Amino acid sequence: MENVFNLYSAIKEQNDYKTDDLPGFNEIEIRDLIVCDINLDDLISVNSMYSRIEFNKISFYSTYFVQTSFHECTFKNVDFTKSNLNSTSFTLCSFIACSFAGAEIMDA
Image (cartoon, rainbow, N blue to C red; front, side):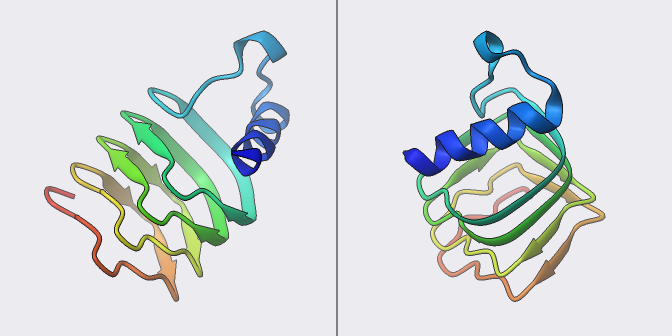
């Protein structure tokens, strides 16, 4: 859980959120961020939009990304093993050395 709070801090700094309105990962738009070396296993993100994010050395093991969109994102050494990516869209994204073993990718 500590890693999620570290990511919250980065999101807050990059996206000008006030401390008391720092969002969760559902129904959120996150943009222009570099996220490196972090374990975000079991994260839940529904109906969200990620734009121009660089994900590097991230573990999204068993993560739940549903009805979420990624636009112009780069995924480098990202582990999506056993993640749910149903109804998720990836537009103009690049994937380098990523794992999707056992991931659910219906209607993506």
